[in-house]
Length: 357
Ligand SMILES: Cc1ncc(COP(=O)(O)O)c(C=O)c1O
Image (cartoon, rainbow, N blue to C red; front, top):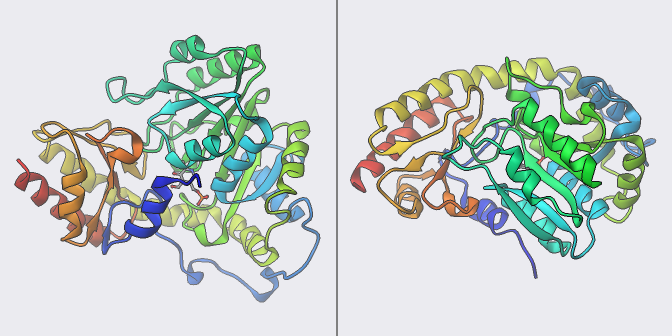
């Protein structure tokens, strides 16, 4: 059976008292949402996605409701896009490193991968010329995360537009997983689906808003392609859970407050991580994005982050070893949990790092 090695690890081993493996904001409690009994709907018209939810998503992201497919989380949104567009043997261009679950879904569907790099040496940026060189007549889909998992680096708008042109010229689509996008501030770009043409956005309320439990995800793309996505979904989720969708509608009314919660937790933690990286510049190199919830440091003198991970377990601390991102010399460090936990977690990373040298 084909599985996602990262997801298996994440479900079984990522949890820890000082959890720096988490890439999203700490989950909300019910009290973080101002809900009334009327917000909860048990049954209703959700065969093509609960209309008020499609409207709320469309309004927030600047598209029409006819461009919205509801899916259980970005995870299923990504799989649904691939299932709609890929047949066995089709080529899919994937950034490297990338979120392994997406690779696993494409592999499950029998697609062939071609990789383009988002290397540390290039600041985890995308080189559109490299993408151009790798597109072939068999390329059906180009897949990116922006901001990038694991580095947190966003693709710059000109590069994104060029990739769209390349894809359109070759009859391919571009799927951009934007699950971390809303954390961007000054450099915030419109979501790619508003650029039309070959672009497809996937996203959810998980990472930026702490509402993973709602499993509220979506796909944004042209109305014609949306119709295909919805028909593909008839083979998977069919329709989503109305109580979750109706709470998601209430959450959309409060997204600005939820983002304020996210930023109030994140801002001091980001300062701690920057200081930590400065204090450990002899041991770590890192590209630090202006806004992100995680970074992807590289060990300067060690080839593998696995021993760091293993020793941290004894201190009830977790990071994500770089092997899950095909870069063992790196590790992913998340910092969107409680300030006290980030503080202690970084202390533990510091002491283990020093002990390994
Ligand atoms: C790039 C990316 N996409 C999707 C997900 C999962 O999102 P969701 O909880 O909405 O399925 C993750 C989780 O780590 C992720 O990093």
